Length: 150
Image (cartoon, rainbow, N blue to C red; front, side, top):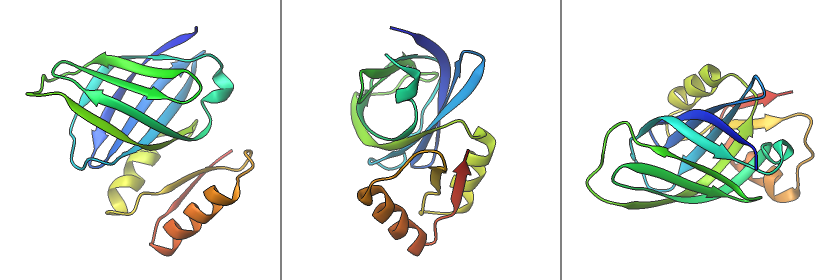
């Protein structure tokens, strides 16, 4: 199973992960259901079966331990690594996310400037099902910005 090293840092109710896959950055922008869970992991390992699975929307579950972060995504994808600052207790976490090759700086600025409404990270090259289109429509109506990745 291929692996890639990277980092994850919280930005409010969102985590942004950045991984080096074959010399190209790949980002995971994830919304966390539990609010205000601050964390930073500067040495996480992404394990995956196929790089083609690191595209588009995903659901995930995981935990923030006393000393580490563990996340499990669909398609046998996992992310694990030590926390920069230990915590007091184990916290189960879950949410949704989007893989992108877009610039992390752009994603970070958009997530901070849009308040409680996360930006829509959308790839122009990936077909969308009706559920995804409906979700994006609701987010746009709530004032979300759009980040398009090609």
